[in-house]
Length: 368
Image (cartoon, rainbow, N blue to C red; front, top):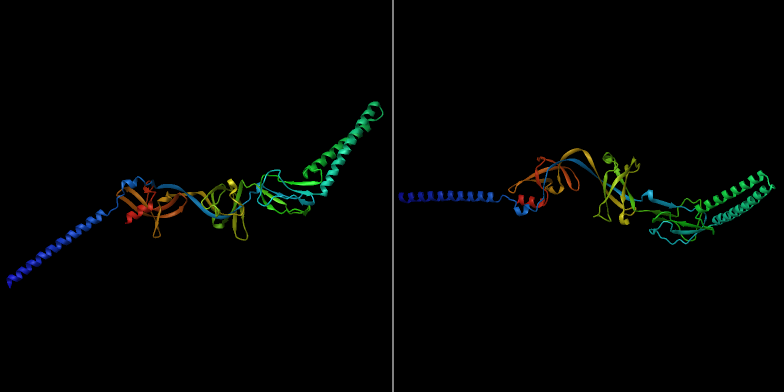
């Protein structure tokens, strides 16, 4: 029995030693696996990445406003009837492009007929006054007319000439037609943006309604609304990016041209005016516009390329690069952001090298 017990004790001791040895091997294998799982950035991938540095930058303020496209009032002409009559020969439509001097319509007018009669009368009176002056000059040379009569004849001719000039100016202002027609012409090149005239329409010169409105849409205005909280952040000549629903992928560049220093009593907003070039006439009046105003603030902050920021689990991160085997994920706070720069706070310093492209790919690799 003692021999059997002694053998059993020895067997148990051997099994205990083997078990400890096995656990030691497993621990060593686990440690080796942990060490081997550390991510090392391949040189081939590093060549495709963009590396940048943390910089100290003046904070750029960006404010987003809503607005709408409007005519440039400096290049808009409203055409009113100058005489009474019946409108004819209206062949243009709303939205048509017209050239300077193009006929928009013709008004058959008794007033124009009266101006024509005035012109004929003034021309006749001038011819009579000239003949009278010639005769008086001959008589004065022959001693048959006095100096006073000659001066009277000269004055009569000057008055007749003055009256003719007046009638011609009046006729020119009213279209220049001597056959009783008032020709409505476009004074500028542009688009018909308002049309309140039709054929056979009777009009009066004292009517306050305009017949046509012509606008040159080579430049347009965007009128944007600024709420009280953002008024202090808007300045003259601030750079502006404008997008529209019709062209969501196209950015129109402009600047703040005028600030209306009063608040609308209804919606409590201040209006600002933005001047935009309009190549191809793609911006139409009354279009909705999304306006992003950018200006330089008076404070500085750390900044990185926006492409370096990774957002995950309600937190922003950047990756600081020390070497291929030493890339740190650093949480940061975001102060402000523009299209290409993000202003941050966090445990980073000016000059730290960061990964600025394929950030999500590297972030996932480091976490896995």
